[in-house]
Length: 167
Image 1 (tube, rainbow, N blue to C red):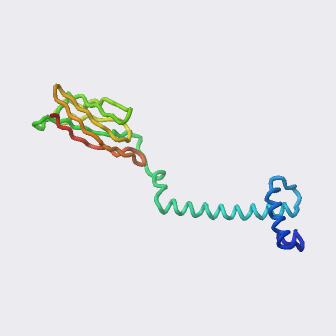
Image 2: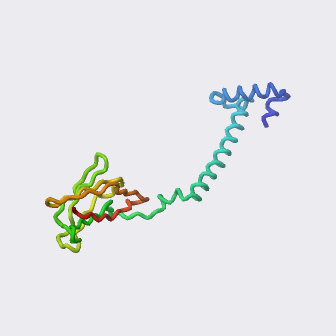
Image 3: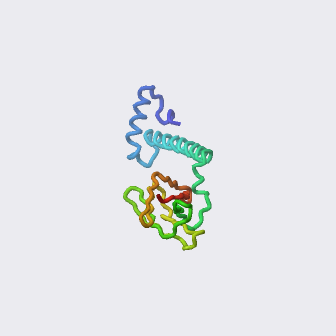
């Protein structure tokens, strides 16, 4: 115990010894001296506090679900952020439109998938979250949709389906 290594020290000399030990812990000799005894006890107490704190953090992380992103089973298939259907005023799908999506300085022209009017949809960008503006043009008609938000998930983005009617 610290008191036995320091002998019959008074309270003030004990606090001076502790302060001295804290300053000398890095340079304490290998043999057990009063300074070394205080360093060893302080290190043990610190380890106990850290292990208790670690246990509390693990419990809180598990309880709040912050570990769910590590436990999710992710697929290796990429997910498109947007799926855009372009319609004319009559409600017919347009397969030859130019669809451009922008998010800040990012810009991409999306390809149409298929020429069959029942399946013509424009997809992209791949695995990119953001707030998009969508510009669609076909012939002399055009339309714009703003503030389409795509959020990221644990593994993939959460895609948004958007229908744009040309005017």
